[in-house]
Length: 183
Figure 1 (cartoon, rainbow, N blue to C red):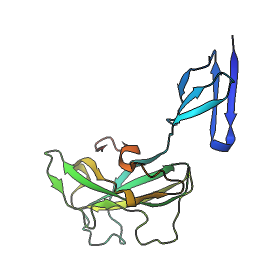
Figure 2 (cartoon, rainbow, N blue to C red):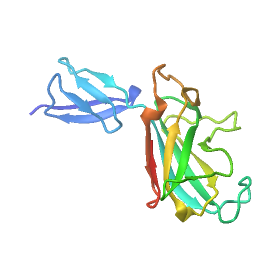
Figure 3 (cartoon, rainbow, N blue to C red):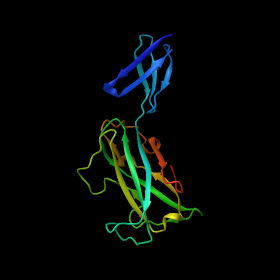
Figure 4 (cartoon, one colour):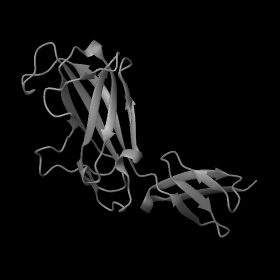
């Protein structure tokens, strides 16, 4: 049985192949699609570049939250960079809905914008940062968050392909069981 291990640290691919044959196409755990060539080299057919946006918690607003009320809900998001480059800018326009699909108002902008007024902030590949927004509703009223738009200019990372669609490449999930997040 053919046993081949391919490890290319320079571009961050490391996986093992058991019984792999030339021409076989493999998808790695990070979303890249790789084709094994006759000479045991390989080529990347599809990049696994993406950003991950997770809702990681809810709670009451802090004293630093602009124009918030004690009963409002603070949503905390984590943004992780898996683009292969340094992330210089990211924001997403969102819509927050209750169980009846009525839109809930935020106490600031309706966007997730961790870079906001921070000119010197950058996030290396594999790095993460958090951002919070305050919704003018109790946390148990929030049912769904929809990512409406991630403008191309709002998704800026080094070595970014000109045709990169940040919204399409954005992976979303919620660690809060009562709140769904979707694109």
